[in-house]
Image 1: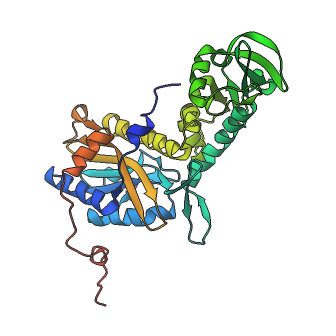
Image 2: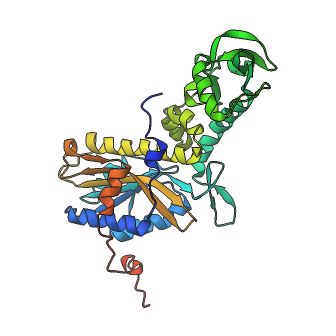
Image 3: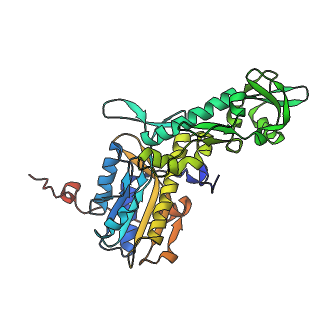
Length: 355
């Protein structure tokens, strides 16, 4: 696996109300001398994100420029267009998840009453991998005999998997077993359990004489996924899968896999936009603030935001740009006053509320 995303507990920060977050961002940029501000946003094109986008534009007195696609995919090239529509840029983005969680999946109630996974696009990417891992964790058994821990691995996981359109799981035998097979089991071969895994097993209770599923002991070091990934596709689902594929073993092993996938996607997209701002976009003397994080949807109308990553560049000085992790970003935002607009939302929208 390549460089790992930040740990889950590092990203699990307090939620902020949207008007508080946007008001603090406005105060920060006002104090820093931002001028001709164009707010821009990359979010999933879900109906639950509509009010958030409107409020974001309201706090900066300009409708937000769209940088995103379904699944909170960032299109960095749109920044070039955005740069022509304003001087300084304030950018918000990241994935979203339903606040109601069930077995590690976030749900939301849609306008027609149906309760559905949210973000649905990221859930569709996740579900195939989650099912394959859970099946392997159920079918691979551990037990013990008089000489110590054993593991039974079905034949379907012993053979090398061909790369195809459907995801498969390939177990890393050197991480699971110690030595050659001892004999036949019900579905496959029986081995001595790797001593390192045997130590991990002690945290999950005593082994029994009869085989039990390996379950949560099938950790990311013990397997990898195999699938033909199309890195050139422009289809949003395939683009997300290509971006997240290397991190999916860790995601499916999380107790909150849906939220973990949302966090990892936010992390990936944040570093894409930061790289574009420092390496490609002609920022000249522009000020740029980027706040990325997880939106928690309580309904299609009400959301909160978990700030996780920040980027601040002053006067186009890319080499002096500052990056903020969750704790530092919270410290930066929490000391700001909460700006409140002097005009109503209807006045901002150009609507005379008296008529």
